[in-house]
Length: 469
Image (cartoon, rainbow, N blue to C red; front, side):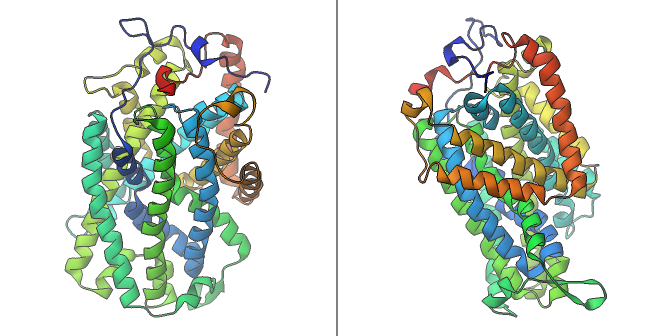
């Protein structure tokens, strides 16, 4: 806590200046509707349902819906923390700007590294699911298809943000329709009652039925938190949202509520409608849809999901490029890198940062998928924990009287959240903890030997000048 941020007006004396000598700033161009569309598209409910949820079905079986429901309840507390901090510190830096301001620059730097892991890994994880849902038309290698989606999303990410809000909005409608079709078909072909949602069963080897333990559910909560993780996109867009003091909180909370319904209702329907436990554990939702209806409906749903994945890639590239842009503006890197990453292109987007998100994302499509899932789950949980710590510190000193949305049940909410997230983190596989811990250790060394000795000129987290407007 001794290495806290300087006042905002002193930060960034020489960061990425424009012709007038002022730091580069993103323009406020979207309202709550556009922000919600972009944020919902980043949650990408349908592609999450069809790409990520099947992995939970394979390990948790009938307990999948319960695990996602518990994760969604935890996310309410997380959303409260994001809403208060996002309206208090509306910056494109998102989590790292909020945590740096409240908990100190080292904590903010570690959150930045964790968020960078998430923003680099999640898009290719989702993109690799494209091949499965284009299979009714064309058979593609999953890694090649994922890389193609990432490159396409990168090109779209170079466009104006308002244009992308409309593009992603159209795609979002299609994926909501796909999720609704799955829900209706699952409920109308129900094979078991609501009691199956708490039966805690999964198909084992040799046709046996295994019991899902409470510890397995707890370990699955890291992935469950990841499923609705995209609601935090609203804080990354806070510099481009009109009236951020009001619209950031509204966007965060509305997105969490809508995305939870879009994901959880079909999961319940699939659990009840699967013909047997082996089919449910197999997690092949497209085959279930075809069995419940016909091949034409199955093809329609698959194509909607493929579009949803492309949609998610576009929004995630947009979000993630803003993180890199903000880190360069806040002087996280040697000056030549800062200058490049903070450049804005013809359409007002940070084009170099966009390329540096999209191209490596395409390469990550060739990495083992289980490793990507595991590291992402650990990173998201650890990031949420540090955000909760920052929320616990958000009402001290000058911040006590700053106009902002304030969460109910403070400080009880962040204290309980910290305890629960720390426990969930302790239950994750050691391999993924070591991967994430190793990367965090390297980042700490970078802080100790490069950033901290240059504290007067490096890692100067700033808040937009018009924040009071």
